[in-house]
Length: 265
Image (cartoon, rainbow, N blue to C red; front, top):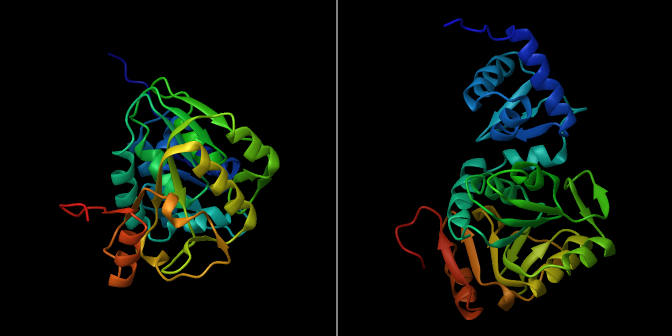
């Protein structure tokens, strides 16, 4: 058998860097492998070489450009608490059955959930975010619907009245929502009014609402209430929160799931 030689490593590195730039400066390993039509192991080898030169930075399950001009705010968020987000995503994805409809928002933790859904089948995915759409389109019979609107660089997602109107066309089995803070009095908080408006619209359309949030979000302030706390069904996090938050979650009748724990609280 004749073995076909791999392209020169420099060519592969240039391809990977160009692909990362086209994706806004960051991407999951699986997405890069699919875009370049190579194995994930090939991507990891190429990334390792580029990381040594300081051209990019590896995070759990992904990579982003270190060039300040190319690095997106989303890439920076993707790298924070990456291991915790990965555990949360694995737990949340396990709650979504094949063949169901799921909404995924623009959060970095939600991007991890999208990656964990790549082996699911026949999903109807509704999202306003580019990263989940790219991860899941064309895989295993999944159908992806990308809501339009004003595309914002920070979130790599669309917002506005047209986005909310589009979401209103769907019956959503499970909504995966990210937040910027959790307050023991007000509940789930977001930094922007547009994000909060969209979250409320999604909550009203979904049968089950799951918030994914790492431990750093407890006690973190933000100006806008995402939705009535009682409208959330499940919170998936990586550490058991302080007693005051556990008490409030119980009062709001929200199921607390600690990723990696043997039992659900």
